[in-house]
Amino acid sequence: MAVLIRGGQVLAGTPATLRRADVLIEADRIAALGPGLTAPAGARVIEAADRIVLPGMGNAHTHAHGHLARGRVGSWTLEDLLSHSTANSGFRTPDDEYLSAAIGAIEMLKTGCTGAYDLYIAVPAITDETFAAVVQAYTDVGVRVVLAPAVADIVFYQTVPGLTDLLPPDLRRTVQDIQSSPTKGLLDLTERAIRRWHGGAEGRVRVAVAPTIPNQATDELLDGCAALAREYGVGIHTHLAESKVQVVESRRRWGKSIVARLADHHVLGPGFVGAHSVWLDDDDLRMLADAGAAVAHNPGSNLRLGVGIAPVREMLDRGLAVGLGTDGSTCADNQNLFEALRIASVISTVRFPHETARWLDADTVWGLATSGTARVMGQPGDLGALAPGRKADLALLRSDSIFLRPLADPVKALVYAETGASVDTVLVDGRVVLEQGRVTTVDETRIYARAQEAADRQRERAAAAWALAERLAPYVAAACRGAVATPLPINRFAAPTPTA
Image (cartoon, rainbow, N blue to C red; front, side, top):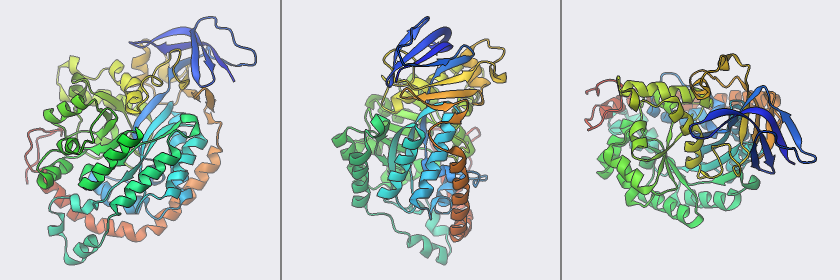
């Protein structure tokens, strides 16, 4: 069915500006944009005189599994979070994973986000059933997704330099008894996911390959992931140089940077996306740019976990495509890209004191969440802008919102003032999936009630795993402090590099 959005203030163009126009949608695409358009016979008409019409934003990096564990993370580093993975995300059923993905997708719609790149993780490992449940959740709610089964065949505790030597004998034995998943099984699962789900939900579901953290991937796994990406023409997404600990470990174990190791295994390319990418040096940035790769910037998560401030200005100066993400709800607490927009801009100012030309201004970060994430998701010609021929993924905001009045510059208002509370209506593929602030596709009240029950059950089941993670915490912290004291030629902290 055709849809005519009539009389709205449409944010379009480069740089983005507001103008009064109609938007005609036929099937899943924008057919025309301009004043005085005629609605075809039988078209649905949405009166938008008091609405601002935006391209749907894209979340460049999130985790479906994390939403069910929201609120459990205190003052943790990234390594603390990884050490608590079983406690936060283990002991779940496929229905639990469905609910976790669904509440995250609902939150994205309610804050104007129409698509996401999701590295889905399950503990101890993803199964065909849990992956199918997450696909179903995104399909039911109606959010576009690139979904990547995140896999690892090296146990996390083996990647923290010096940790084993610090552990008392009983904890050392416990950690050494943890077995990784077989490499072939992980690659087979990834291939089955691609073959079954890639292109599903009328193209709204795509599947990618995800060696979750390069330090937790053997050479065999990296080679296998690269081969699958080439064979099926899908993307590769990984957590790239997120923390200094990871960079120090890569140089200790393999004698080279993480990016250089990925290049050696032919992982880099136009379909490669590195999430976070905080601890990259000039050579790393050059290799990524030369490969045509992209970065998913997650400023809220980077600050929440204390990993540092990513060199986004340098990435953009090199021509790297950069998208904007929230990360999962355990490490960024919400899926609200409006919050990420503001953080991305204001945190850039501390890196370049009084060099305002190098700050990430409102237009730049708005581009990260729209055209930048469209590139990250591998759909630059379809997503991220309002124009004829583009996918009809868009959001309508109430123009009388307290966050948008008085309105001087719309992009500055969206980046610095809007919270997501003004979002009224959202369309994905030309279908209304949020109307007057309510999701139209699922019973969100029932889903949230079931999610609370699932979260409570999981926490009870994971009590022993939580106790183990808490026992390990001081040793993980001590090992990480030792690694962070290792000198590197770059510093991404907002303070001098600590010493041992």
